[in-house]
Length: 372
Image 1 (spheres, rainbow, N blue to C red):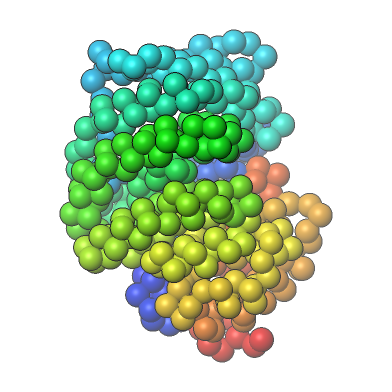
Image 2: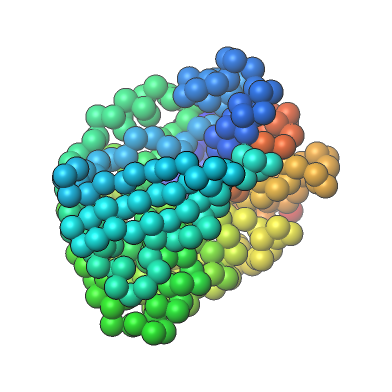
């Protein structure tokens, strides 16, 4: 079987000839490019695919979106200004006013962090509502199919929806701390904002359901420690509604949960998620492999299992390979398993380990034959 065939076999409830091995190398590629250590043949989008091919690991994230989103540029805009010292000022303009945010470039980690979120007061939520109500949606199916066909047997395109309303407030608009204060101090305004965001996405999900494509993922980057209570209060019913519609259209549905799992892991599965993606077990995450197995069900596909921190010191390669065997033995026998680095192989990661994991999975063969 090819990597693509293995993944689709697992997602459809079958048993592959070996556990599929997929992981996201975009962060490694970006960091190595910035550091000047990446070979030229591995740069850019074609280089990323070649990097996955040469390491024997499947590519799956960052296809084009199934649905494109546009807004009237005379009414809505985003402007960015370099503030120096690695900081960037971002201005979001709308008919309801403007919001500003500041990000900080982190040179050592080849990443950035938000220093100041756009929404600071309950009054700022009016801009969020306007932003969502001002969106128009159109299908982008051909672009997704073209990307998936280009990746071919070396991958499986898993298109992402936008973040759901609560996750968008946490990650893009408010930050979890400010949102917690807003929920306490202005609950009616927060609920009204979420209602408007949910309603505005009806057309988005109608077009997503209409797409003749078998897989879709909600990229909410959830962490039970940060948003578990908020998710149960504001997102549980929304997930059930959207996932049920996606299932009715014949789709397998994933959700990106690369933080702490806690009770949120079981809640997502109860809400209908078929494959929690980027699952991070202990000793990096909070749940053991056995707890993850017990919190899921025989119809769940676990996508993840290898914390990407394990590609970097202090973890040793041989120890990681023995951990891979445990993951396959504990999760692969009774659950569907797509082994993947969770979340991304870091720029200082041991990239040779990616190949070694793939070779090991080939040796192990079908997960039903792996020893506990």
